[in-house]
Image (cartoon, helix red, strand yellow):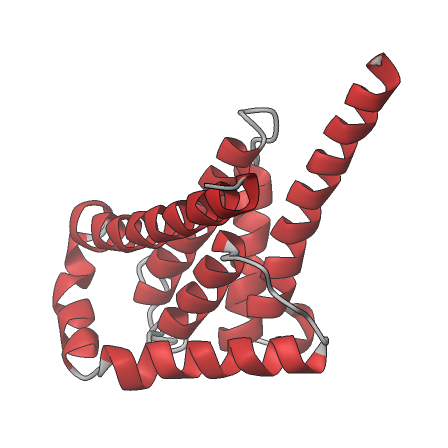
Length: 184
């Protein structure tokens, strides 16, 4: 097996693991941390056709993204999959605006799970050298909330969230290459 093929297999494995982690994190936030949301989430999920409502729009977005930016994708990008899958799920849930306790809402729980999953991927990719602070995680969550629930001009969504993580990991890899080159 070539190094390129092994790398592609590893990225696919990481992407699958990241999606599984996202799903587990959403379940944990909904059932353990926020048990009062369980009924509301079950009602929302029962109305969703996962393939038609989440997977097909995500893949359509992906194809459009590749075409628009003239990207030739050589492998699976776990950050892109998690961002786009997470935002498709987020687009299906909401918060009740009349509730003063804004912290208790499915959108927030899914958003936290999405950001935690991405932060975990970044920590893994950087071998623990890049850890997002709680402040940064809250900031990203607030940007997601602003985009879909408040004022979109002050928010971020799947492409911006993806770019933030993609650029972070790319910069880290470039820094490592420069460090290796300098030491030789």
